[in-house]
Length: 97
Image (cartoon, rainbow, N blue to C red; front, side):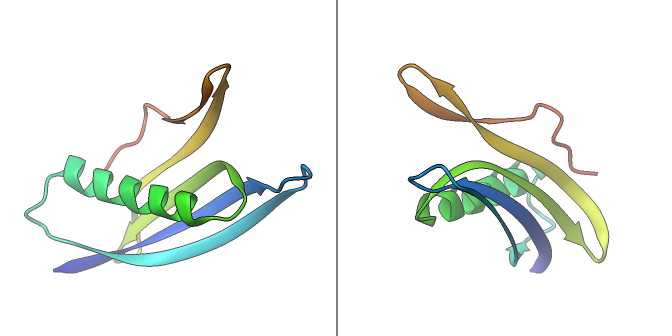
């Protein structure tokens, strides 16, 4: 098992509309036997757990994943407010190098 460092910046808004930015990071274990899609999905699932546990509304989250100091993945999720509710969207250009 190896581990990568995932750093993120989360932008949130409280009930009265005040926006705030939080920075965080975590170590995420992974296996070299996993496909890039499995690793990317694991990072996404972990970030969604952070979003769901946050007490304020999260507007967007930007992240970078590093392995041995090299950036291997970056991306962001943001809310897309629709009349029926908001959905999470990610950019199409997330890549693992």
